[in-house]
Length: 256
Image 1 (cartoon, rainbow, N blue to C red):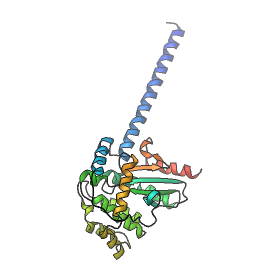
Image 2: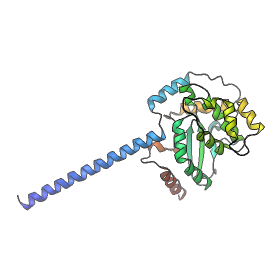
Image 3: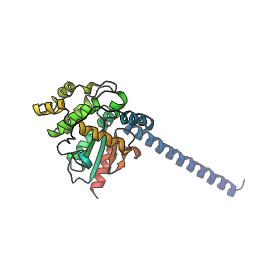
Image 4: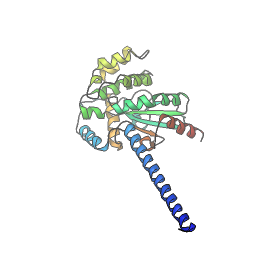
């Protein structure tokens, strides 16, 4: 075999190896994206179709005026803000206090979100959904959301929000449907267990607001909770998403 032919074959093998390596890397990125999306948004489209149907035809009996919690912002005042209003980045978090995937998200990302909001680099906007009530039955999603809104009135939203996730019952256990449980958990937050808070929880002061927020989620087209958007970008679509990557994205955006 001539040197020219050997060189041609070697070049062809190298090209083939390079193409295989490229395909392998692309497949690895694709798998990472799928895994990341599954972690961030564990309720798949098929499940959500059932959730939407369950909620759409369900009347939970909530009536009365829509009373937004103190400081709520956005269209119809449905967002509970945490952090400085002039932060360069905004993280919108759709959550359901009964949702196990939301608990997983909070467990992994909460410290990073707190760090960034405390540093003035990030503004978080929490929007509350009640899809587990619709799928599993019960009222725990709604009542926990109302209690969180009551905590916002008292300036204790973040601390109580974290306590709820740290003490989340099993998905099929409607423990949060008992106001006594929600009031008991309030004792874990300094200064929250007050007559005003207890009345707000027991009267369901923000129930109609929660219902409106839940409907906004159903109308949004999002495919499950948690749905997390950084400056409008769904983090479930970001390959290999991690708390460190979220921090990097926020810091880079702050630099302009």
